Image (cartoon, rainbow, N blue to C red; front, side, top):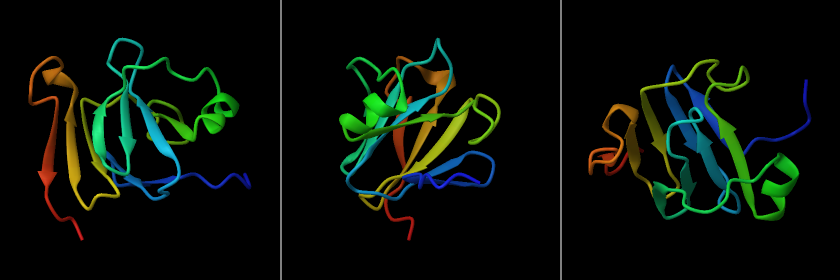
Length: 111
């Protein structure tokens, strides 16, 4: 068991819950999909250089969430829900990359 406290929770089959305000989440689905950042203000496409490892990410107040890794979901997803700290749930639809429907608000208040 790792003593590393992750700044997110995994719920169900395709939901990530952001839980620490001081760290942003860098969500990586697979190598060909755009990288998404989850911050306290919402979800958007990440345009900066992705941190190489967790140490570099920590220095930039970020954490890497690899959706396909065995400690998260174990497979890449075509549809992902993210509950952000701004009290909104976002829907990330990887089949609609490049459109306005790629990242959109799914629920205004999820609590």
